[in-house]
Image (cartoon, rainbow, N blue to C red; front, top):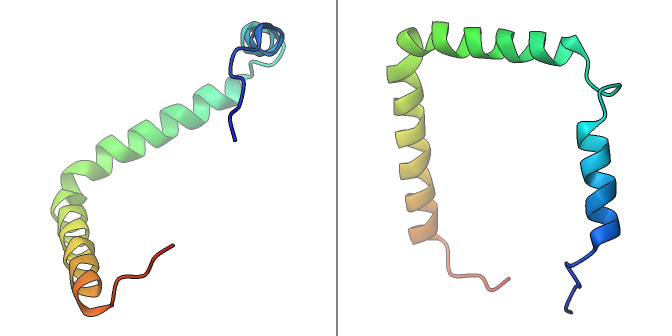
Length: 73
């Protein structure tokens, strides 16, 4: 199925919604600042834990892919 991605009316509507100042609220900025603060603060303490978890999940996925037969989706 081929979709027509050239839709100028939808593009104009999306740009209007994106540039509409009444949609903007300060709680979004507050949540972004909190998430960035937590991520930078905890990065130093949990960097080894996070990297170890990513490495462990990677090894688990490799193990599962070798032990299970190939399944066509």
